[in-house]
Length: 340
Image (cartoon, rainbow, N blue to C red; front, side):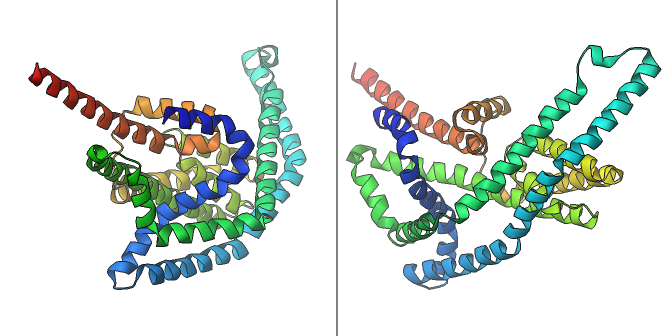
């Protein structure tokens, strides 16, 4: 397993384009499988359940793409074009603040650090991120082959789920199959509950925050909702980073609604974090906050933004696998001690 993992990491940069659709299909099949199970419990066959779920999801995706994605791309493009004026406005704010502090304290803060340069770098990085998101949306919308391959592979994985599970279990020695099944069930319980719960919470936070920004009259409400939803997927400091980014956006567009927007963000985070999250998070990963933060930094450095989002599921999976390996080795040691 270590050799296979090392080989995959070694060849991943070369074959990433080939593996990515299949990895996306596996993740989608894992997330959609509970919905298929609901229709199966209603008496429908596996094939019919998969078809019904896919038709429903296809309608939702097409409706969202037609109504939301074009406006999101337009908002991003508008914000990119207006960034020079925003930077000029921010520089004026900083100049006035620097002069006020200099007159008030008799110290020239520009001698110690250049606020204009720091915020200019932040704004340039933010503009580059917006440009990257816009380019990614446009490029992914043109990848027709992946649009065909991913749903097709997902459908085959869902229909022939038992076949693939049996194929994987065939590679496991007989004496370890029961432990393997139990381990997979534990991983599914912990990670499945976390991913589904965290995904729903992020979706609710993004929608609620975007609606709040729209009601306050902010021009980039869709971008604010996307930022709030994506950053909420990173535990602990993700919502803090999202709040800072949103507050900067509000400061550049309409500073008068900063306090109401902050109240909206706080109310959404409190309601979703304290009332909705406990009901949706069916699985407890059982990791200490220190290990969660370390895993976020570690996998974020390894795989970027996706690594930060998937850090907790990966760390929890490693914990479950390590626990089973330790129990197996401990049982072997006990048997050998009894023999002695």
